[in-house]
Length: 462
Image 1 (cartoon, rainbow, N blue to C red):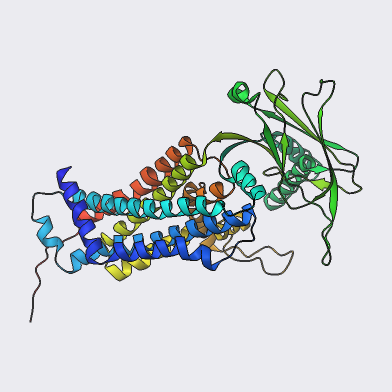
Image 2 (tube, rainbow, N blue to C red):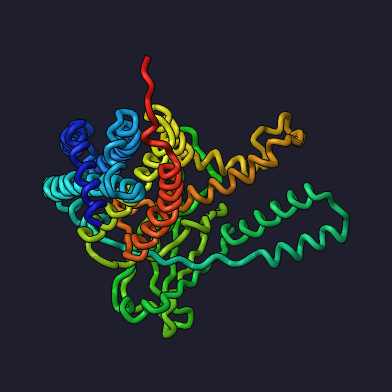
């Protein structure tokens, strides 16, 4: 490990030689201090966190991400192009140790820079929070400066029901493979709609199992976070509002806890505090919504209703969020070093940015996979002409999307700005998927190509 640490020190010296470290420190401090001063918040707790958390942490991540790609490409490719690597490889040190040393050097550099920028965001946020009105400070303490866990009702498995209905449809009238696929999708959407839509004068019930948390949370206050959609739309004027009536508690209880909201808006999250001791003997919380409006309301399966509970403090949650960002930067360092192991600096930088753009294009990948083609179908009602390229591209995009989702499945900035808990389990899973798995894949490719590359090829002049 002494050889690896020697390369790590050389990586730090190279960062200082390029003046990258001090430039990044100035840029990061500028993002932390100047950005909140330039962009004014609206004086509310949510506007405050949008500025100080979403914008600043997003800017910090972007700055460090591009700097990591530039440094990781240049620190290896330029050493080879400028004939400095020839002197290193002649010493008793393996090439994998050189590669790992540079990777750890970039990671440690990012850790220090992220610590400086993160500390600035944290303390500036605490200082500016004191200038908010007392009511908004209370919202910060209860909704943002906290780590809240979440529980939802597990979605009902509808595949068996869909399979049975498909068999009945095929039995009545044989369908082609394409028509079967279309019929299956229509049936799935209909079954999902039945779970989400609450018709007028009907009710929707959720049963949320607290499992092992029932004993620790039985006497703790909870929060219902709900969102519904409405088919009504008003292009002008104020949006329509609806009456929300919630009943919480065991169904067999003599009296349920009632929340009557006479005027609530659609397409908006509403957080409703409920008192403790509403769980039944099995640790389940029953929540019922009664629709007394003259129009059906839709509660999405993914965000229609969830229960929030206090899981920890903000400080430790903030550190875990920075840890996930560091995992992202570690992957970018592996990508840049992998490219520089067999490409020149300009080409390696281009390749790394292309990989980054691919990682940010999950929406496009998803669209191609859902269509089953890279091309639009032309006129409405007409199937797209079969293309041989789709037979290769769609499976490749499907595999790429799975890899991208391993990284994008973690959103520390969104979690911190909404007061959601980032658990140690999530941080460990992020480290395993992003650093060990994906970073390890790029590291294995980079080390292999670096070992196979001819470094000290004789140069002939004249």
